[in-house]
Amino acid sequence: MCLNSPRVRLILVSLFATALYGYDVISDVLLAVAYSREANHTMEFGLTTAYIVAPTILCNAICAYFIRVETSAWTTEAFFQLILTFPFLLGPLVRHAKAIIRACRGKETQKVEAHTALIILLEGYFESASQLILQLYLSIVQDHHEELSTRILRSAAMVGSGIGLAWSLVSVRRTNRLQDQDEDNDETLCGSIVYFLAKVCEVGPRVVLMALFASHFTFYAFILGAGHWIICSLWIFIIDKTRERKSCINIILKILIGYPLIFCFVDLDYVYTETEREHIPTRYKMMLYYLLFYTENWLMFALWITTMADTVIWFYPVSIAIVAGGMVLHIIFQIIYYKGCHPGKENIPILRKFTLDSCLYHDDEESKVV
Image (tube, rainbow, N blue to C red; front, side):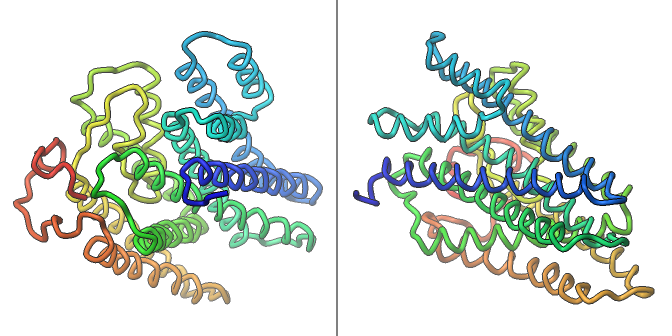
């Protein structure tokens, strides 16, 4: 078995993703069952269950749509895939199995991989990120006794959600590189590692900070998250205004894709499925995004710090180190990646004339940079 073969790597990646998805779902379900058996845990049970059921239905609905997109005629195989997706809600597993089967048969897998990456992205943020914030929040505000088994299951579920979230970043990045056919766009292993570390240092502090902020300002945490989602969804519609197809499903996908942007910057050039890919330079979009992102982070951090005067819990210093240190490391890793590891680092300008049009629309001369 040659590990350098793209098809072999696809099979191994799909098997790992299948195992990870199973662990994440099972650990969350077991935690919800544990909450249902605990006294005074009705809210915990309800919220945990909601964050399992809603993302599962959402992702399976998207899986069902992609089955239709990838099927020119309804065959027995396509119908069987649809049945497993609804009502059995096994859509993500069907996607991974389909990728493995196509790879084993030597068929083209690019479209399947792109669709699967989008599903992993949405599942990672709607389920894993939301579940991770919820369980961190419950750990902070917990004021009554819990069984040891419940605490162990919550820790296991948080680990699964954290790994699932990290995997969604890796999956999208991998698909981005596979979709780009530019020969000069090959990324080294070192570059991939630095990029991944940068994203971990971006998402990790954000998740911890949102949980800490919600523990004292629950209502405003929802307002901030919803506001950021609306802004990012509107931004997606603005930068996509030149695209021809405006189907209902594309509109829904754009709104859904705005949700992961609550937690980190995501390259959106590869996530559309019904339109021709048009590369848009990302550096100016990143500048505007991170201006909003870090303004929110430091605002939440400053407001949360004010609540420490009355009560100082042991994990507060650890949280401060994670949040503040993570934000600093994120910037450092970003600089290292784009100045030292990016495939087109020699062509990345340090200073350019900054205009609003350059943030929103395509620039032919710069389209392959960043």
